[in-house]
Image (cartoon, rainbow, N blue to C red; front, top):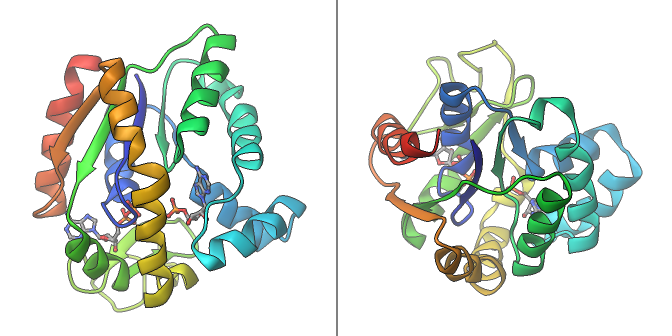
Length: 216
Ligand code: ADP
Ligand code: AMP
């Protein structure tokens, strides 16, 4: 299955991606994770991306699309993938079509996680991520059994710099202006499926898997 997840920051894309990718045995490709790994390693790409990420802005399309083009050429993506956080603009979506066309592939489905702004702000303000394995937690909604420690691997949890409140509001504006137009773009192509992404994480996973099964 070739799948894209869309939805505002905090909708639960990364959380659901963990379970969906495992269920359908496809690699999860998160552009945010790739940028963050480059920032921690201090690569040139990381240094370029960091200033945009800290401001809550999008990294320029050419930089992001070139990175995804390379990633999708890797062997593990040959028979399917889940893209989390890409595309985020209509030009990125057009580039994705081109990249897949060059590889003789096409998208099967775009899953939209539907959540309102207030819920998203509550989710982002309590998000914690494992420094070691990347598992996503929430201090209230999905807490690990020991505060600050990942249940999966024992790693330390951290709060993302861009989850501090001013940046969150700006990221939601950026989503509304630059990313939300993708919903109409993919609806017109007939590949969009939307699910209600509110309620417990497990319930959302069940809804997502049920919506995606016909495309597997
Ligand atoms: P995104 O990748 O879309 O930005 P995340 O998957 O990182 O969003 O989720 C944002 C925060 O919301 C995380 O702290 C996560 O634990 C929490 N979260 C995810 N799904 C739910 C849910 N169904 N209910 C409550 N909190 C959730
Ligand atoms: P995420 O982890 O998906 O919330 O992404 C974190 C940050 O990485 C975003 O706020 C952007 O600055 C950057 N980023 C991730 N994916 C993209 C993308 N497809 N296009 C541009 N910037 C991106």
